Amino acid sequence: MSTSRFSTIPGAPAGHPSSVSITSLTLALRESQLENDRLAETIRELKDKVAELQAEKAARKRGRKGRSSKNAAPAGSDDEGQVDDPETKITSLAKRFCILHRPWVPEASFGQQPPKPSSDPSYFGSREQWTLGSSAEIYEVVPSELHHLLSTARISSVFRSAVGAQRVAMAHSLKTCAPRIFAKIDIPESAFTSATTRAESGQLQALLKWNVNKPGFPTLAPILYEPHSGRDRPFQNPVLPLILRVILFGPSSLTSRPAANSSGRKWEVSQVTIGGICLSAVMARFLISEDTELSRVGSTTNIDYEEAFHAYHSHICRRTQHIQ
Image (spheres, one colour):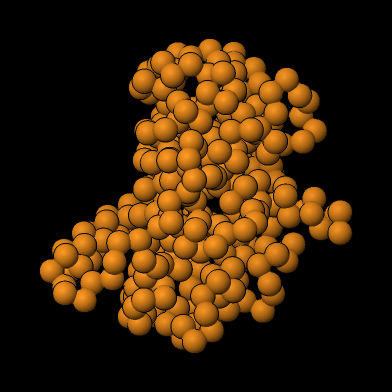
């Protein structure tokens, strides 16, 4: 709605004090709202960072206990099947959720199970709708006997912390083997030396945007498409399955049989999920960008990675439902 309808009082001449004051008030309110939105975003990002740090601290603590315990589970064993502790089970489930379902979990996703399944089209749209979809998917993944714990502040914090820690670990692991992954599409290893080399690489920039002279980065970037093809079929670039392979089975899986203690083997993953495809797409853009950490919004590029994940998820779900 145009603010001009409220900028003057009927009958007041141009430049009348009432006109100036109301216009100034309108601008001030608008600026105040923008500032509130920025503060809310900053608070949300700080909470995510705190959750990640808490998860890393908890992981180190569990590692110390495991080394000192005579009954510690052997390396590579699946926590989910070995330990009865609810927090350990939730942590394991959250790591799996991060990879196969959603790598970001809004704080408001816990409390009460939504009545509709996570695939319901009504969950595609605003952040509030996506939060409901995330909640529905969490309750689908977590066994029913643990549902009562999801409404507790402690368990919801454990879940979000584990998701954040897994996201950080995935990004770090992929960074170390990015040159091997992108060799598949003839990107030289030298392009991945640093954030500067990634920014200066014409090949990588051409994979991030259709027109390198335009500011901003399109959500459906060229990296998502098969090289030298049109824009009709996203998520066909051959690096995407390699990225997901590394996430599930480790860097060694690029050249040899996946290790027995890899997540994909332990979870007996036999098919690709929509969440996994979207995650690989987000990671592909992150790996060729100047950003050094996979935050919700890239610190250098300002790419909204979480929003991109939602967009990819909606795109695939809608096309799948249309085919059905």
